[in-house]
Amino acid sequence: MSTPVAAHNLFENSEVFRMACEQLRTVAAELPEFDVGIIDRLMLPKRSLVVSVPVRMDSGKTQVFLGYRVQHSLTSGASKGGLRYAPNVDIGEVAALAMWMSWKCGIMGLPYGGAKGGIACDPAKLSLGEKERLTRRFTEEVLSIIGPRVDVMAPDMGTDEQTMAWIYDTYSMKIGYACPEIVTGKPVELGGCIGRREATGRGVVYCILEALKELNLTPDTCTAVVQGYGNVGSVTCDELHKLGLKVIAIGDRYGSIRNTHGINIPALQKYVLAPENERHTIVGYPKAEAIPDDELLTTPCTVLIPAATERVINKENAGKLQCRVIAEGANGPTTPEADRILAETDVFIIPDVLCNAGGVTVSYFEWVQDLQQFMWDEDQVNSALRKQMHKAYSKVRHKALSRKLTMRTAALSLGVEKVANEKAKRGLFP
Ligand code: NAD
Image (cartoon, rainbow, N blue to C red; front, side, top):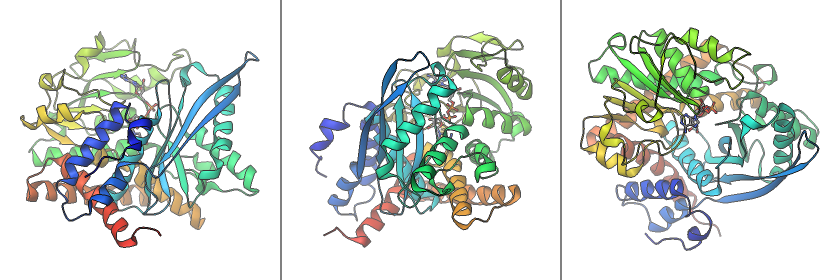
């Protein structure tokens, strides 16, 4: 495999992008049937746009933000992926997340390529009006490369249903008619899919249940530790709690809490959403003790669920983990060095591209419903999600066992193989 020279300038400063490339190189070794040129094409995103986004702040001053939209692959259909608002987001991180989306859509058999977007900002420090102006202006700036058959956005870290509603409205105003299929993860009243908000967390839990079954463990005898209490983390906690699995420690960006008898998740949720809890944080919840952040991931438990951000399980802490299963709700939480350390232990890893794929799967259901203007009910959504997750989980598990691969290499190779196959069959233009 040759190394594309251009990659050095644009993306290679990012550790997250280098990590995604290293994973692809590992997987390419398992797929010798593909031409080197095809793997080289997959190593770089198809299209990347960097935009400056000027916003009139509430103070009356103008602030300029940097925004990104990266489409990794358009081979399998429209590209699909979240939009992230986070202070340190950069083009390399967005490109890595776009690449992972391609493999995820491949594993789930969805007719999409991968994409991702981001704006470098701290959403916690923006007013609602500032967030709306930021989102609308960003949408305008990337208008030339998005479209319901080109690139479809969804929520990710720091963005939510409201963000998608603003994108939907801005795009519809530009083209002159309502176009709900331009985004997924919108409010249900605007053509959103029932169950989309919960889909990623539910998918994580379906995967955990499969892993526990294989390990002969029942949920009511198990414990969980969750990093991140946003969309993915909070729904995962709630679903686990309903199954009788004790969530004993949780962390968010403001701190970490622990109660070894099990945290009462509905009570915690009430505490987090209370209007007087302005940062909507878990910190200060009275029925748990505060613990240092660096103790969270190493707390002894059955299932560890990173559901916040990248590279949190790394060579410094991988050897100290005391869990039986890692269920990756977040994208890219485990570095390749940590993977190598964990491969020497009996920790069972459910990799991100499989574990958190429930979100994009229900996004696909939403897109299909919007295109057809024919909406499903919640039972239909949930049973289709469960079926797709089980199917994908067993495909990955079968590949891992039959080829003696780690779950991550098995999952990635299924995703890469699908996209590479389609590229090979379509040929190279011109
Ligand atoms: P979110 O913004 O709703 O929540 C993020 C949570 O992580 C918050 O509780 C925040 O306080 C916490 N957090 C942020 N940085 C942290 C840190 N350094 N340490 C501890 N906690 C931290 O985001 P989300 O949508 O739940 O996404 C979380 C992860 O899941 C991301 O990696 C995202 O890419 C991935 N993911 C999300 C979806 C989805 O449908 N939302 C789908 C697939 C994957």
